[in-house]
Image 1 (cartoon, helix red, strand yellow):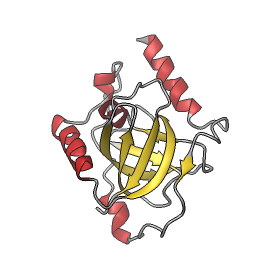
Image 2: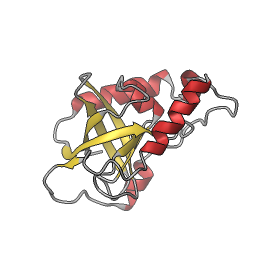
Image 3: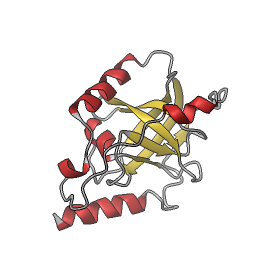
Image 4: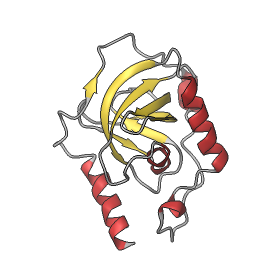
Length: 165
């Protein structure tokens, strides 16, 4: 258990390092995503916070079965999504509930999806701007990492898309 907490802290800390500048490739610039006043309201990262005494992955991941199913099903449609690029993702703060990605690939909150080619998995996420240099990598929520079947202590390379809503 102590090892898991250390690995989570290590992965979260690594995501902010400047040693990852070559680990993110952006798609060629395209037209900017529409930034509406409703975009921030659409992003639903708030959820049930894990209990203060949470120690296991299951205790930290407070998403419901319905939320997980909806995120996987929503990602399957994928038509017409705008490719934002490829990024290396680390585990974000395990205590932050929801299915989200913090990334410098977006400048405003919105909806998106993440594909993990190594496993052939995809999940719908809330995209949250990350104040970091392009190329510095992204952070995925615990729930998103689990749904993608990514190693929680790894640095999976994922493709990010902005969705229409």
